[in-house]
Image (cartoon, rainbow, N blue to C red; front, side):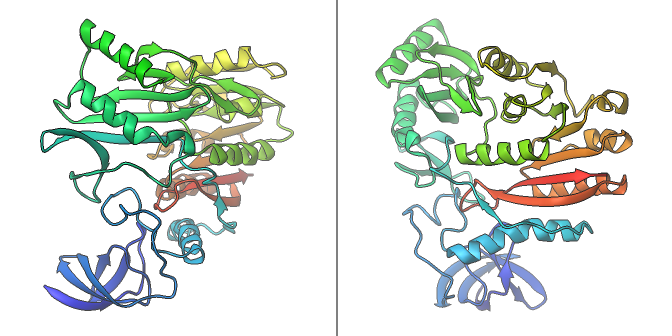
Length: 407
């Protein structure tokens, strides 16, 4: 069904939202105040024409925009974009009944994303790499991406060469990370390599001048250390190990967390990864880093041992979803920092709430689980004194939030 709609507001994913009767309809790539012609499909619609454009509309910077599913908001001007992203945090907290001042959005895009995962598929008999179309399993082949850091300029070409070499027998995911040593690549989807394949991949890594090549996290060859600077330390993360999306984002988050912990002598860093917070906190405090992925903690330990001037950092491999630190353990610390995956830290937060802790810094990449976890802490007597939104996922609905709490 084709009809005309007037867009009322922006949804959580950046879609325009209009009312058709009493039904909210989501229309991608539209802005508030615009009149558009659409093809309706339930509570979603395909944009056909923009009949009256918003003054906040701008030309996208990428020719793949609206086809590739990676970006949702390249059509927004800067003022509207910043307002919408901050409101994602404001509305999530308000929905949870949490009152706090949400600070101005921090632009942490910097030079761009330092890691990307592209998908390899066989199209018309040829290996192609790219991103999926929005809400689809259809591959959109790409040869460039404007949100990536300069160190990833070769990423599409390198990924294509790898996909052609291994043959795309089944869906292939290729993760590429820009490091000081060059590209760090982890292939997923091939299955265990035979000796002949391992030798071929090793030779290809040399031909493509890769720093490191791994398969499902298992090292194939390391030609140079794929190092990342974290604070004053230089660390080599494990293959496929978690990293903040941008170098500027990691630095700004690290500064915020370090400032919030100033004066605290003993700090627990939970869901620590390979140490983006622990390594910075250790410049002033002793740190206990807890993480379920042992290779990440091993990388952290090596970085601590090779960096002068850091306070002691102890590590503990532990699944905090199943075995959160208990109040008696938490009470040993002057402050706790936690930065969980998108699912949040509900089990750990309940133990923090039951502890005697007075200083907590929460970092999250999901506004909904962040609001849920803050509600638990506030009910236990904490106050959310600062809410800091940070944007290192330009043109998407993904957000980073820091909450500073005390009681």
